[in-house]
Image 1: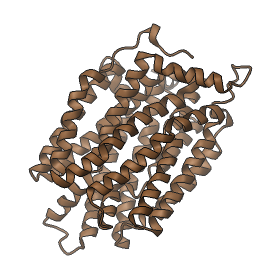
Image 2 (image 1 turned 45 degrees about the vertical axis):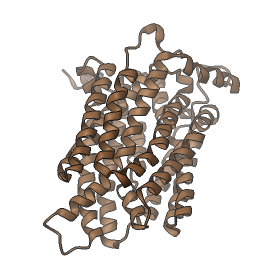
Image 3 (image 1 turned 135 degrees about the vertical axis):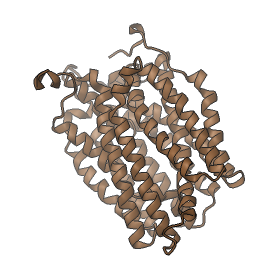
Length: 425
């Protein structure tokens, strides 16, 4: 097969592809992420209080999720993304200058505002780009490739964050450091092509008004396959994001039990272990994202592949919880590594499946509905899991979440979308 023929069998890696990838890479340079629970614990917060802070973050996102997605579809997606980056910067400044519980609650609320403007919006821009350039058939591969860049950013983030904590001896400086990638991303997003706003489709003579967008938005809830796709993706990701934070205290326990690095302070030892493990986790997640399209084709399509990853994911969570309870912290960390990879293998398939069931004109709103359901799951479960971790321990809490995921598989199992049920354009 010639190089030209082979090129026809995949998407185009043009300048905009690399700009999409740069967005994901910079977005995931969140130096606070591998250490956020440890930072709050160092500040004297209980797991219940930390769970409440996460709930505040998710609740603020939850309240604004659909309105911000609606605004993005109606008034422009670039503006929404720029405002998101500004919100993150403000949140980091609050956490750096005032580590108290009230300030932390405010910072989490502002961060949630930024999440509301971001989630779903950039994915909608990617899907809009693929539609306009005739590459929609490659959406799983394309989104998987851009997500791989995001996870590579997370891998680099883990090492840089660990180095920052190691050399400063404090978790506090991760917040101002996280503001720099946001500034760079703000510039990147502000200079995207204007037609990616989604408000000036050349195939439509008149710009859609409020009622046009509202009509398409409400159609999401009348499509059974769209509802199932959104809830399935949101519940899996919501449960995953609640329990993934408990990897940090597991790694801290692992660091304390290592027979090496004994001469170092606890925070320095923890930084090295957390940095290396998260680097491996996100490196694996990057590879998994890139393989998503290939995996879905080898398992009879998106639906079958998504269902398989749900079953395997619930088993990994239960296993990680049991190992943590038995004190097998290295084994629990290994299962978390597999879980992160699985979630990133699954995510591009879920986005592609949702795009087949939600009208393209309100894709940002549709993905915002998915994020809303996800945030609702996290808002409800984060404090409950925090309370359980305080009283039962981290291992049993993680295992219970895995058991819950197993029980939810049957009512949320995906079904194939027939041509009659596909979203109208």
